[in-house]
Amino acid sequence: MNPSTPLWIKTPLAILAADGADASGGVVVSGGRIAELVPAGGKPALECQTFDASRHVVLPGLINTHHHFYQTLTRAHPAAINKELFDWLTALYPIWAKLGPEALRLATRLALTELMMSGVTCSSDHHYVFPDGLEDALDIQAEEATALGMRMVLNRGSMNLSQKDGGLPPDSVVQDADTILADCERVIGAYHDASEGSMLQVALAPCSPFSVTRELMRDTATLAKKCGCALHTHLGETHDEDEFCVSMFGCRPVDYLEDCGWLGTKTWLAHGIHFDDGEIARLGGAGVGVSHCPTSNTVLASGLCRTRDLEAAGVKVGLGVDGSASNDSSNLMEGVRHALMLNRIRYDATVSHLDALRWATAGSAACLGRDDIGSIAVGKQADLALFTLDELRFSGAHDPLAALVLCGAHRADRVMIKGRWTVKDGMPAGVDIEKLRHDHGAIAKLFAEAA
Ligand SMILES: [Zn+2]
Image 1 (cartoon, helix red, strand yellow):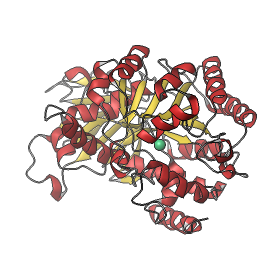
Image 2 (tube, protein in one colour):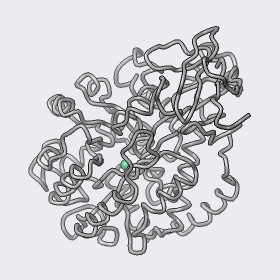
Image 3 (cartoon, rainbow, N blue to C red):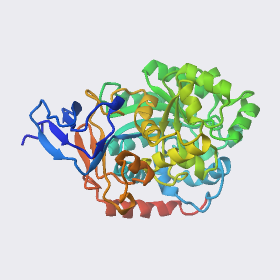
Image 4 (cartoon, rainbow, N blue to C red):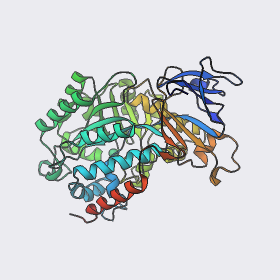
């Protein structure tokens, strides 16, 4: 049959459709979009080829709102394990200064592949390390995402406040503000596609209050506004950050953000843990998003994000894995499970698997400012993650959607992005997994020794 013929993903075991819509008969995909939801016992209006989904639980493709792909090269690093954020960063900055183009290429390919195999169809990556020779970091990432068929938001990160100026990173990993802003404009021009169904977008992403000057924060916000881009940074991750802001800038992090012109609907923040009630109300009123990173927050002992309070105040809450040296994996389904568990500790058992799945899909899409992905509804992009319950860990499970989260689904059987299968039978199309693991592992050895 002609590959452009609509595809009926027929009678899934379960499906998470938007707003409780009946899609028990499956979905029809055509032209890269979801064309029909088929109710129980129904048949598509369009003439279709068929994919039998009777073994599959169908989710909207997961969306990862925060990551640092390059950190896959320094997972479980002896210099950094068992430390909290500032000590962890100080140990790793000099090691990350060794990052070069080939290492970043392999790290990006590995992280994207790992994410995709866990059901991710769109990922953000916050890249802020630009040692000499790595000026084309985002070009490399754009090439890799395109080759894999992954939807991606490239975050042009930046650091220009080094130790000599009172910041945390060493001089070897920072750039000057003029270089940073010029490259921001360049990558926006080259890669930012704001159209519906876009596969590549650019966000501007100074790293954090303790690695960027106030002037660069302000100038970045001005440039993002001019170019119609989103803004992203780390905020509210630790109490150390609060203390740094007060001593360096004379105010708490949210005051600082407001002063820099960052409080708006196109800003999403990584972590967002240590906000007080008044700050949460201000963030909600401004329509800011928060990328909740439960696994990383646990590894670095950073704290528990106030997701329910944030959402009640109007903050958009999405999910992120965060960097692979503070996770140390790139598996967002695992993050969904951790989100459920941690939020039950913070709140109670009314936080459900559906909340955790919503954060990883529609919530994440909202953080990224997108309404064309993140849910299964007619007209949305055909980004889907299909899981089977064939592994031992699911045997005896009854509610299929709850089972994915409670029993710990880890690996999608099928993934579709923009109507194209990118994972089949658990394996990513066009990727030699063994070679990738070998090549990535070999280049990671360069990062074995502390500088
Ligand atoms: Zn991060």
